[in-house]
Length: 189
Image 1 (tube, rainbow, N blue to C red):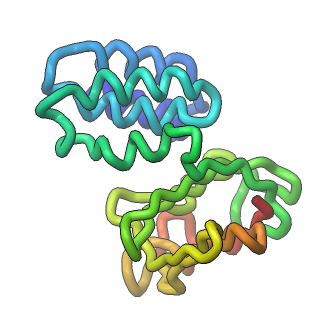
Image 2 (image 1 turned 120 degrees about the vertical axis):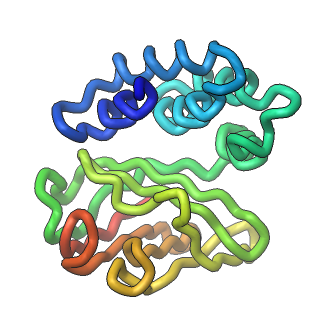
């Protein structure tokens, strides 16, 4: 329950965003015994943009022998590496998202897994893409990743998502059936 509350605090669900309190709770839980390893994973994602060293420490703690499969250690190591694909894109076009305006900074990451990628995009209090099942086809050419999928929530349960590192763009779009309703967002990496 504490880990779930910390996630709500990180995202501003049911109240204001309270990052410091959320990260403190997740740090405490990550230090506990094996049954709290998922908190280390949550801590990585919560600290990834403003405290990379804390995120790396959570990977080291959570990925001790025997727990790798439980929290996705390969992905977390990739994400927190110096070559990890972490971005803070700036919104260039947005409709349908309360509290998000042109010029705002967002947070995004991408993890390549063969011909599939996992991704995450959050702007303001909105997580626009990146549930546990969110993935999209991707490819890499000349060290530049691109990919995405065009199915909105009515078709596959999450928004459409595109990223093109060479072009410097990232976008998410959804229809009225999604949790945030219909929206469109385009940002520059």
